[in-house]
Image 1 (tube, rainbow, N blue to C red):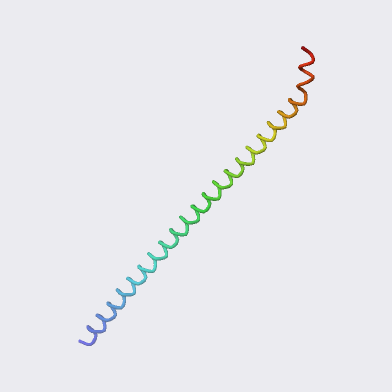
Image 2 (cartoon, rainbow, N blue to C red):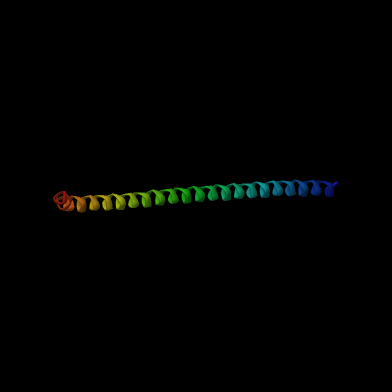
Length: 84
């Protein structure tokens, strides 16, 4: 009888320990998935910000070149009008 009781207690302890281990593993998996998703989102946001900033820099450079070309054309305009 005593062995039956001890076996029952050991079985309950083993089942409870297995459930605790399963919950811990599940929590670890959820935490890892959340961390991976957060890292991916941060990387995507950083890439988008970098692409936007590079696009702005290119746009500013293009506008500056166009303004410089326009100024050069305005400076040379009297030469072209005298040829006619």
